[in-house]
Amino acid sequence: MRLPRAIDLEPDARLALGQIVGIMTDQAMSGAAVRWDVERLMELEVRLGVVGGAVDVDDTSDIVTLGIDDAALLLDGMAFTEVASADLPWIEMVRWTSDFVTGELRRYWTQAEWLELTADPG
Image (tube, rainbow, N blue to C red; front, side, top):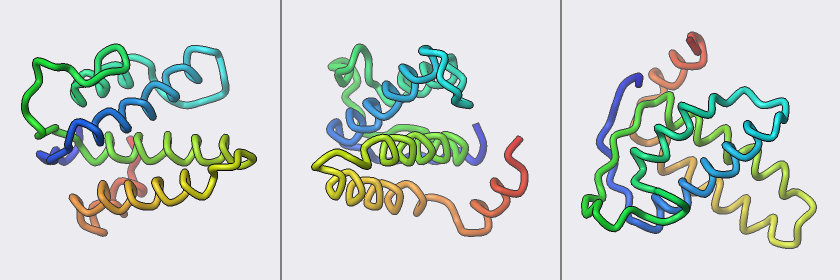
């Protein structure tokens, strides 16, 4: 985890991000040409407190620790979902949600930190 931050995520937000991780996991396990590591996705799902498609009822904290690499992974999954949803009637809602979540996740790191991540993705 690179540049970890404690992020306040309400249960609905954690569930929504968990659904994105689920879509990514399904794609990775189906043999699709994606660059996502299933183990990493599962670890992220656990940190989000999303187990079996529901928010873990024993997890009463809204604070989740995410690294900038986790946020980048989630943003990549949202971009994939947006492209895959392009022909659906609710695409505008998908785009609005992606834009909103992108803004919310990106604000925890500086522009310089994002640029450093893209310059050195390893």
